Every structure is written in C-alpha cells, then in structure tokens.
Length: 518
Image (cartoon, rainbow, N blue to C red; front, side, top):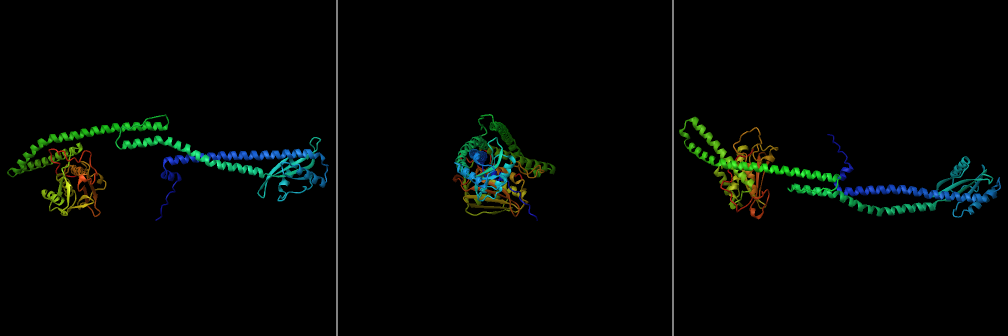
C-alpha cells in the first residue's frame, strides 16, 4: 500500500490556527512598517551615498583643474621626463585638502612616476584611453585592497584656446573619509530603526484595538444570544463595513427573536391543547373503562363474536386511557408542576416490588445488593423501571438483566437485553416523544411516551438516563441518580421549576408503564 502524502501546510493557515486575530493584525502592521522603513532607508541611503560621492568627485576634479590651470603654463612642451616628474610633484604638493598622488604622461610616453602601488595599470590604462577618445576629464572609482579610491585623468590644454598639449594628469586619491561618512549614515539608520519599530508598535496596538473592538462586541452579543438573551442588540456607529456587519447582526437577532417567540407561542398552544384534550378525555374514558370492566366480567356468557368485540374494545380503551395518562403526565412536566416526594427506600425492595406487581419475576434477572438505600420518589422510580423493563421485554431479547449498585455517591441501575440493539442513527432520539425507530410500524402497544416520561422522572431526581449498545450485543439503559438529591449529588438535566418537594403532584398518577418509542 502506498501512503498518500500529506499536503504541505501553508504558512498562512498555520499562523491563522496558532494565532488570534489581534496578534496577526499587530504583526502584520509591524511587518508593513518594517518593510516601509527598509524601503525608505534603502532609497535614502542610495541617494545620500550618491550625493556624497558626487560632491567629493566634483570637488576633487575642480581642485585638480585649478591646480593644473595654475601650474600648467610653466610646463615646457614637449616636456622631458624630468619636467613631467617635477610637474607631478608640484601638483601633489598643491593638493591641499586632497592628499592625492599625481602622475603625468605625455603623448604615448610612459606614466611618470608610474602607477601607484597595487595598481596593475588597468584603471590608468582605461582612463588614458578614455581621455584620448573624449579629450575631456574622466574619472573612475576603484577598490584597491579594500581601500576605495578615486582616479582622475585630466588632459592639459594650451592657454591659447584649448589646444590639447598631449599632457595628461592622473590624480589618485582615497575615498576613505567618504566611506566613513556613509558607514556612519548606515549606523545611524540601524540605530534609529529600533526605536522606530518600537514606536510603530503603539499605533499597531491602537489600530488592532479599534478594528477588533466591534468584533469583540459582536462576539459578546452572539454569546448573550446563545445563552438565551434574544433581545440583545448592538449600537450602530459609522458607515463602514463593520457598521454594515452590526446592522446585519441586529437584523438577524430580531428575526431570531421573532421566530423564537412564534415557536414558543405555538409550542405553548400545542401543550395546552394536549393537556386540555387529555383532561377532557379522562372523564369519559374512566366511564368507558368501568363499562368495559363490567363487560369483561360477562364475556364468558356472550357469544364468541360479541366476546371478541368486547375484548377488543376493552383493550383499545385501556390503551387509550394509558395514553391519556401519559399525555397528562408529560403536560405536568412541561408546566413545571411535577414534584418529588422523596423517601428513603431500600433499592432491592423497590425493584422487586416493580417486578412482582407486573409479573416480571421470571423474565428479568435482577442483581440487587442488599442494604443499598437511597432517597427516591418510589412512585416515579417505579415508573422509570417499569418503562425501561417493558421496553426491553417488548423490543429487546430475553433474558433482560437488571443490575443496581452504588458508586461515587450515586445510584446506578442498568437494564440490558439480548436483542439486536438500537440502530446507531436512532440512538440519539430514543428519548424523543413519539419517536419510532421503525417508521414503517404505524402502531405500537405503547403510547410512544414511555422513555420520554422515564427521562423526565430521572431528571426530576437530578439524574441522568442514557441509552447505548453493549459490546456483546443488546441495548443497555443506565439510570444514574444521586443517592440523596438534597445533598447535591448531581444536578444533571434538572428542568427549571422541577424538584419541588412542597408541591403537589396533582390528582393523577405520575404515569404508569408505557411503551417506549423503539
């Protein structure tokens, strides 16, 4: 197998992941400032360096011209070698502020007193050729063993109107002073760059703060909206892109608040409708249940067809009555009217009572430690266990196993089966109301509220109820409750307004065993 090479990580992406927006803005501002300073310093340096060298060259050429014009008339033409040597010596002595070394040549004769030490003759030879071609003064900068020097070649003309005499003067002078001036300029630029960079940091921080302040306000406003403060709005100032973003945010928040208000209104109406319908159906259903109970007692004396019809009516009436009770119980949870009536109970006794009342002693393998006690609402825990065990018996596979134990101040109860388990896609929704993992199953024996009611009763105890698939197969529902809810053994999933011990649970039973959604 050939390994697929990982794409190279781009520097910009790496920086974006590692650094926040503020450091990136500051660093970006500093980089721009440094680049601008470098560009400005480079241009300034080149201009200053050129001006310094140009001024020195012009000054040297002018001084040499002055001296040549002053001493040139005394030179006899054609000159002898001694005359050229004397002429060169006098020009050197008249150099003044320019400690140059002067050589002289006549026509095609040698350069007297000869090229300077280290000079191979290439510079003087090229200058001599240039003077011969242009018949004017030329100069060239050369580097001789690290010493920058200026070499000037100047033709000497007769005083009668500029007729070339054939004599050429060569002046060789050092530019070390100019080099020192340029080095001092570079040093000054380097020294000044540090405080300039530090000073650039201040406007960078100020600019980053001004840019990020609206972003930070948007973040805080978004967090307030996330926490439920949907009336959060931001003041809009200016007309730039950030102002447009703030307006868009306010518009989004207003739309979200409006939608939330409408959804809450519709949800409240739906809950009120379900509660009202359930309450209105309860009285006639009670009468129908009583009537079907009487008919059930007489079913053996009825003809078979009538008996079957009576039993069907009786079963459907009982199912409808359970659904109404479940709806009324859910309505109490939604209204925050459900309350706990805690009592210290023996867990093993409570579980065995649940199994015995429903005839599940032979269908459930219970592992219950003796002496395990907890402060619970016995009636609501009975509903939780009944719904979980009923769901396991109906949708799972035998045997159903129940295990209870205490750990870390919490009571844990597992209800497991040997069925096919829960579809992973359905797992997050098993506690949703009226949820059916198999959409093709139009009807079930339960109301579709059993696991939802179990979840609400568990939350009322400040506990949690989870569903999972066991590694060896089958579904596992785990109830985790604080041993004593009053000691804060966990506030996980407690609904607002729940957990009141002084309230009444209402006249109705907290919900009997109901079929789950599976």
